[in-house]
Length: 218
Image 1 (cartoon, rainbow, N blue to C red):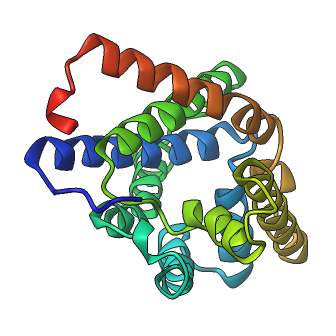
Image 2: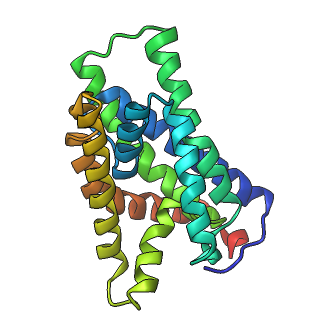
């Protein structure tokens, strides 16, 4: 991954992308239909440790970032830092705002709405984040670490599936040990995210780049 000049337009694309990703995590959590693999692990462990999701996500991202720095540091950029610091806290704030402050009752239709919203925000956020090209989140770099140390014998897709399965299993284990509701971290939303996220990222990225001129990003 080449080092990219930080331009104002890239910076705002990255910020909007990360905002949408934070909104995605919050939407998935409020839907209670399950979350993406990495969030699944972080919710499981943070619940077990009685930590806020945002604090734990920042801590685990910092640990992964150290590993990334000594292995595939070319994937580190400004977006890496903003992502690891902001996503968890954005999700925590939105969940607090809707569920605690506004005390919204999440009915089944609202759960389905949040699930749909989370799926769309996940893909749109990643598309904007990728177009900005200012670094990967620490967890997104894990698949590249696996590829590097298997000398590219494992494809990126398989490496990502392996890492996703591993973190999900960790999240499930900690959730069960904490006697928390397993359906809040893994379920229909987890499957939908795994199946649709890639194609929807491609769709949004193609649509955005086609509809608006991004020649300034070349």
